[in-house]
Image (tube, rainbow, N blue to C red; front, side):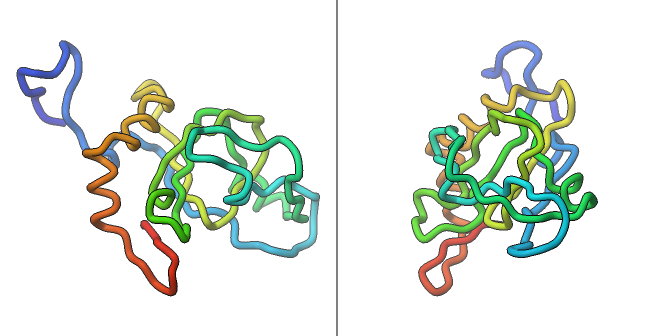
Length: 149
């Protein structure tokens, strides 16, 4: 981390986003499986305003290992990894819960280091023009799908 510029509030500093998270991973690619039926969030279940549907959720049988690997916790950040709309791809929301739902491979999950930042603040920062322009500038488009990595 570097020394904060003069215009930042006292106690703030400049750092890379990668310095703030403890875990980053793409979601579950399983479409059919065996194991315990588990909610797997899809793009249709989440909105860039941060809301997550509580009905019409897809259940996919997942192994215990996959359930642990992809289990969401409130405050996890979900980035929309792929979408037909460039205005949706790359957006980030703070997952509101409940714990235990999992997420599909159209999302990237970031779990912040404890005490680093408030997840809702990070999600809001990703919606700013400055950050959105950086994200869209690195977006790749293939076959009408816009993707971030």
